Amino acid sequence: MLTEDHVSFEVAKLLKEKGFNEYTATVYNQNGSFMPNGAIEDTYQTFYSAPTLQMAMKWLREVHNIFIEISVDEILKDEGYQWALYYNSTKEIRPYSGWGDSYEEACEAAIQYVLKNLI
Image (cartoon, rainbow, N blue to C red):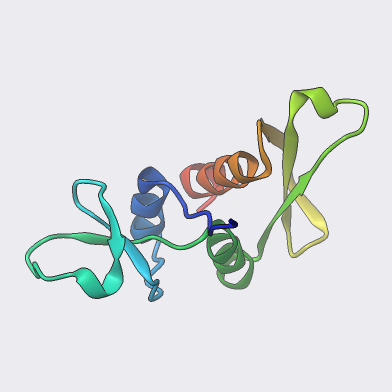
Protein backbone atom coordinates (compact mmCIF):
# COMPACT_ATOMS: atom_id res chain seq x y z
CA MET A 1 0.00 0.00 0.00
CA LEU A 2 1.32 3.42 -0.93
CA THR A 3 1.26 6.13 1.70
CA GLU A 4 2.05 9.83 1.71
CA ASP A 5 5.50 10.85 2.90
CA HIS A 6 5.44 13.83 5.23
CA VAL A 7 8.25 16.12 6.30
CA SER A 8 9.96 15.29 9.57
CA PHE A 9 9.14 17.10 12.80
CA GLU A 10 12.40 19.06 12.52
CA VAL A 11 11.53 20.25 9.01
CA ALA A 12 7.94 21.06 10.07
CA LYS A 13 9.34 23.40 12.75
CA LEU A 14 11.68 25.04 10.21
CA LEU A 15 8.81 25.50 7.76
CA LYS A 16 6.73 27.26 10.40
CA GLU A 17 9.68 29.47 11.34
CA LYS A 18 10.13 30.44 7.66
CA GLY A 19 6.47 31.36 7.14
CA PHE A 20 4.74 28.19 5.98
CA ASN A 21 1.17 28.49 7.27
CA GLU A 22 -0.81 26.33 4.85
CA TYR A 23 -3.58 24.05 6.09
CA THR A 24 -2.51 20.41 6.13
CA ALA A 25 -4.55 17.34 6.98
CA THR A 26 -1.93 16.29 9.52
CA VAL A 27 0.11 18.13 12.13
CA TYR A 28 2.79 17.55 14.72
CA ASN A 29 2.16 18.65 18.31
CA GLN A 30 4.89 20.36 20.33
CA ASN A 31 6.20 16.94 21.42
CA GLY A 32 6.58 15.72 17.84
CA SER A 33 3.56 13.44 17.81
CA PHE A 34 1.94 13.11 14.39
CA MET A 35 -1.85 13.45 14.31
CA PRO A 36 -4.80 14.34 12.09
CA ASN A 37 -5.47 18.09 12.06
CA GLY A 38 -9.10 17.50 13.09
CA ALA A 39 -7.99 15.78 16.30
CA ILE A 40 -6.62 18.99 17.83
CA GLU A 41 -8.36 19.65 21.13
CA ASP A 42 -5.77 21.50 23.22
CA THR A 43 -5.67 25.08 21.96
CA TYR A 44 -2.81 25.94 24.33
CA GLN A 45 -0.37 23.63 22.59
CA THR A 46 1.81 24.64 19.68
CA PHE A 47 1.12 22.72 16.49
CA TYR A 48 3.18 22.44 13.33
CA SER A 49 1.72 21.75 9.89
CA ALA A 50 2.98 18.42 8.55
CA PRO A 51 2.88 18.79 4.77
CA THR A 52 3.87 16.04 2.41
CA LEU A 53 7.33 16.32 0.90
CA GLN A 54 5.77 17.32 -2.43
CA MET A 55 3.65 20.04 -0.79
CA ALA A 56 6.73 21.51 0.91
CA MET A 57 8.67 21.44 -2.37
CA LYS A 58 5.75 23.13 -4.16
CA TRP A 59 5.69 25.87 -1.48
CA LEU A 60 9.42 26.46 -2.01
CA ARG A 61 8.82 26.74 -5.78
CA GLU A 62 5.78 29.00 -5.61
CA VAL A 63 6.79 31.24 -2.72
CA HIS A 64 10.58 31.35 -2.98
CA ASN A 65 11.24 30.31 -6.62
CA ILE A 66 13.52 27.53 -5.43
CA PHE A 67 13.32 24.30 -7.39
CA ILE A 68 14.55 20.98 -6.03
CA GLU A 69 15.60 18.34 -8.53
CA ILE A 70 16.02 14.71 -7.51
CA SER A 71 17.86 12.36 -9.83
CA VAL A 72 19.77 9.11 -10.03
CA ASP A 73 23.06 9.09 -11.90
CA GLU A 74 23.54 5.74 -13.63
CA ILE A 75 27.26 5.79 -12.94
CA LEU A 76 26.83 6.73 -9.28
CA LYS A 77 23.53 4.94 -8.62
CA ASP A 78 25.06 2.95 -5.75
CA GLU A 79 25.54 6.28 -3.95
CA GLY A 80 21.79 6.89 -3.79
CA TYR A 81 19.64 9.75 -5.00
CA GLN A 82 21.20 13.13 -5.69
CA TRP A 83 19.50 16.48 -5.21
CA ALA A 84 20.34 19.85 -6.70
CA LEU A 85 18.86 23.32 -6.20
CA TYR A 86 17.80 25.83 -8.84
CA TYR A 87 16.40 29.35 -8.71
CA ASN A 88 13.65 30.30 -11.17
CA SER A 89 14.09 26.80 -12.64
CA THR A 90 17.20 27.72 -14.63
CA LYS A 91 19.92 29.31 -12.50
CA GLU A 92 21.66 26.99 -10.09
CA ILE A 93 21.72 28.53 -6.62
CA ARG A 94 25.15 27.23 -5.78
CA PRO A 95 27.26 24.33 -6.91
CA TYR A 96 26.05 22.20 -4.04
CA SER A 97 24.02 19.08 -4.07
CA GLY A 98 23.46 16.30 -1.63
CA TRP A 99 22.48 12.66 -1.42
CA GLY A 100 19.83 10.47 0.15
CA ASP A 101 19.48 6.70 0.31
CA SER A 102 15.97 7.01 -1.13
CA TYR A 103 14.03 9.54 -3.19
CA GLU A 104 12.20 10.62 -0.02
CA GLU A 105 15.42 11.04 1.98
CA ALA A 106 16.88 13.17 -0.81
CA CYS A 107 13.74 15.37 -0.82
CA GLU A 108 13.87 15.78 2.96
CA ALA A 109 17.59 16.64 2.91
CA ALA A 110 17.14 19.21 0.14
CA ILE A 111 14.16 20.88 1.85
CA GLN A 112 16.06 21.04 5.12
CA TYR A 113 19.13 22.52 3.41
CA VAL A 114 17.05 25.25 1.75
CA LEU A 115 15.27 26.17 4.99
CA LYS A 116 18.47 26.31 7.04
CA ASN A 117 20.72 28.04 4.52
CA LEU A 118 18.78 29.94 1.86
CA ILE A 119 15.61 31.38 3.37
